Length: 360
Image (cartoon, rainbow, N blue to C red):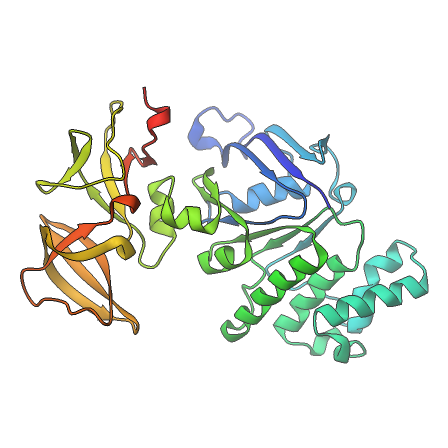
């Protein structure tokens, strides 16, 4: 197991890159603590796989260093880093039995027979593969084969970090939840440092203790699932996390508070410092918008009933936003008024969360 430290990582696939836009990864500084569970989350093309390949040693960064337990491994090979990597598509030896697939990395390390049997049987029990040990791998389902890929990493005692690259892509939807639960359970059992790469927010937020949200080659926020939801550091995080995502509305500032459509919106604390920005927005999640007879007036354009609550599509001064309304609360047919919870209403300047401490 290892603490992984990324220092000033930048990467371009263009050897003569000069402009910021030519870098697949912008400057990234991040620490994955020994034994932690982490996720890299973002859309296709955001740099997740590039960063994963740099950590695993398949790619050398244009700039910066990768450290395992404070040892610089930037120029070392993948096998020297002792990484177990599980890919989108299961990698198994179809002609071998499940037992021999799990034993393969241990036999390559010349481990004794008794120790191999002990490790294989232990991991097979963890992964619910005991009854299948004598079966050929070719006869297993996609989730069974992915368990073998996972097991080949778990049987090793020398693994510094386990990395999962979209591991549930080919798994049937009804089995994904089971395998996600199993991964979480395994992390608690074995204590390896684990990093999960995905574009699926549910997979990331249910697996990881901390999530790095990536956008256009940058880590725009690195935090707990609760932090990403309650206080997004960037408008992309607000849009990407949640379903539907955060509402963003154009505003101006007056006496330290945002004004939207002529209505002053309360915040937890007034803004006292503000630089010059091209775009200022207020952000609030649908969960923190409430019906309020003293609020500002809106028009209802649609109501979607999704079971325990309804999503009200509202419009005000040409701007649309979503409101969560519990099923036990009546929605007025006219004269609907709303207010925002000040604790969870934030101001964003040119896409970034306004921070008084950083403003001059």
